[in-house]
Length: 123
Image 1: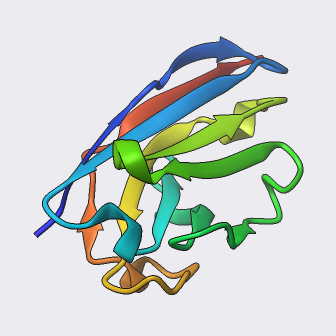
Image 2 (image 1 turned 135 degrees about the horizontal axis):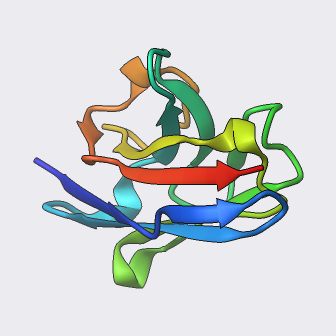
Image 3 (image 1 turned 180 degrees about the horizontal axis):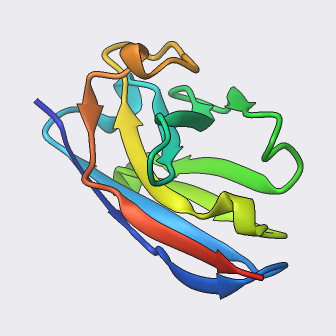
């Protein structure tokens, strides 16, 4: 069992930056891959970024070059640094943890989910 708690969401202007945090508890943090997904109103949850137990990362094309995922295993925390934010980035952002260290872009690849943190980017 893993519990995930996101924080850092808020309202920002287009072109601004925001850093999301996800604190994990319940198991060894370094043993599983972590990811960020987002879901806009009326839309399906979509992949944003993922990181394995070490440094391997994956990003959605829509955020490539703007977002950076990282993790601090000592703090059992994963981060999502979001730069050059666009209005289309507006969504509820969810942190997810996989059962294994393997990265996946599919929601089914993750067994544990946080409650989400809202990110709103104004024009």
